[in-house]
Figure 1 (tube, rainbow, N blue to C red):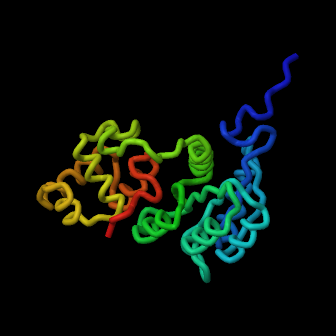
Figure 2 (spheres, rainbow, N blue to C red):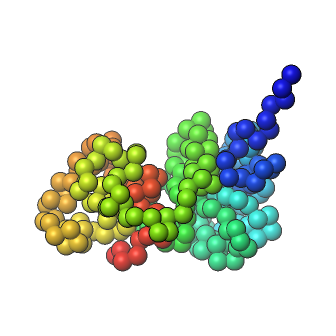
Figure 3 (cartoon, rainbow, N blue to C red):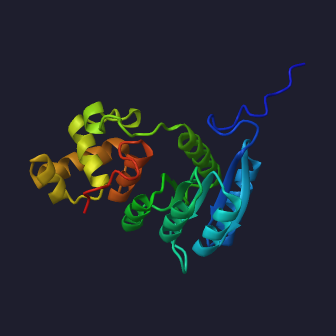
Length: 235
């Protein structure tokens, strides 16, 4: 009888013979413990620590050296954004990937986390099953996504697979909005009117089933249209 492969469900680029190591950070005990329990039950994952605030997250990250940190943004004391900056600045190579736990109505925190080096986002209110599925997907992406260094810009390569419903111009408007540009700044960059930018953005949100600008930002990063660190020049 063939023995099952213990690494079959693990992220492809994780080190052979060991699970993906995760640090869970959230100031709400029920959220933190619930997410940690879900992850512990998932194949190929190991929760190496739980932190209730940013300072504890920095200390645990240095001590446990996780592969991935699930980081809440809004916490008392040191925020998730500040903790992300500290963890990545002080990390010994390879630095962990930081996935931010967020909600759609926090535009300024979304931009701040990306500038701090976060690799992606998860929605805290998605429900346990959907949240676990999202975590699993994002962890696989975090370990398999090739470096964008030297790759052609999305405006040249076209929309990524998750955004094929968009026209080239709609994808370009979404990219600029996700980088933090206002409608007026995007219009100036593209040499079109602000009203035209609004039209493209509204059509984009309709096609993707979105209801807020912050949702559009998250989708742009989730699909790879914009990558962390590419927001230079944004307002």
